[in-house]
Length: 287
Image (cartoon, rainbow, N blue to C red):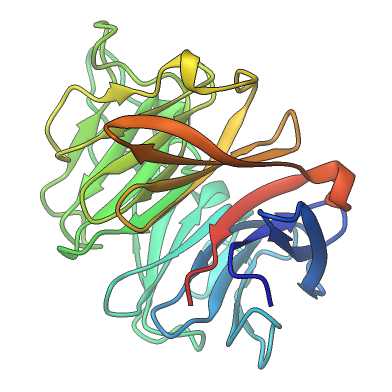
């Protein structure tokens, strides 16, 4: 098996594909989805996928999709979702879900839905209301090493961090009139040991907080890209200096690394050329 792999979810084909970044090839890893969206690796080497169309979360044991388990039905209550767009994992292995249609974040212990906890209601910030505890269709979610949770809230023009799923220590980033700190339609978040990365759909760029949560973010310069991003929609950080960027509009997957203090492209794959038709989520394979 190739050693430089990514998993990419394909909404149109209802499957997750293994993409060989070095050889520019792809094959279906596992399928059976209605509209797969965000995907994340679990601490045990498995994967969790948000199936937007089926209103459920699917967990598999490995890259072959072994022992699939799913939970969730359409609705607004416990063990129910409405168009979930992303699924992440905490360092302890709990599952995190960006339940976009219900404007909330969800955490459960495992695919059985044990210890279901939901946080958030519908709303967006305004000059008169910071909208603490409110989301406008959150699209991406990750768990950091310190136990905190980061979520992208593009409808609200911000990224949110909370110290736990009960909403403690709510902090908002990006809702600013100052260019140095503003985030424009932040749709994707990812993190490595040092930084939090944000894909800004509205600005067609990728930003990072190298000492999160300190502001302002750094912007990955236009000069890095051989073709400027059109719609950077999903990210997957890996190692200490690697980042995968999925451009949904171009159906392109780009791997970049920091080398000698500068970002450089180390791999680029045209996904439609390898059979991926409508990419929606990406995850670096590290297990």
